[in-house]
Length: 215
Ligand code: HEC
Image (tube, rainbow, N blue to C red; front, side):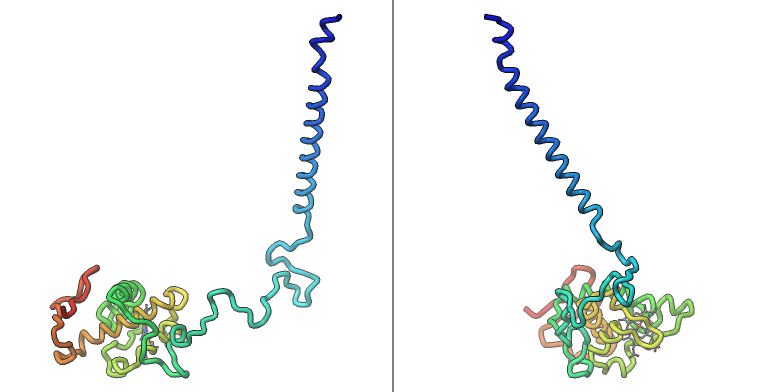
């Protein structure tokens, strides 16, 4: 018996296996490249590309009228407009905690104090350098204004003052409004406004320090 033939016996089988594998690999490659071809050359518009198909020639279509994005229903009129039945509200849309007031103060000092000053008298640094002076928050008209007025002014702007709705989110606008009310109280509150048993600090609470409450 020829020994060479014996040792070579498994070879054809192995070759066959290799050839089969190669075939599968080539086949797989072909399918993949075909996929890419399809997706690469699909009929699609590059964003905002002009279109001859639609009468208004815009490839980007507007959402169907009345479409509301998730989370943007804004059906809570008080929360989003500061108004109830078309009138500026005297109520807050949510209860203010000490943490909300701290946040309100922080946001106020960032966004409003450059003009209105940290005190609220309208004598901020930008005003000292020539910008129109806003009214002081201690003017009787503003002391008596419902809290919704402050929310509304921030949301829509007022005369020479720009609106802050894109920079200050809804809840923060309410926190600022509540803080302005607190600023007003620093000048208008009387001893009799303090509930029995509550100690009033002689200084404004510093960051992280909660107001003292009756035990
Ligand atoms: C760039 C300066 C500037 C900044 C910053 C600014 N304001 Fe004003 N604000 C004004 C001016 C000026 C007026 C007066 C506008 C007028 O009467 O034409 C005004 C008016 C107001 C009034 C009074 C509206 C009324 O009924 O008379 C309120 C309340 C108010 N601002 C709140 C805010 C709050 C809250 C912020 C921060 C989110 C803020 N402002 C940031 C300049 C500013």
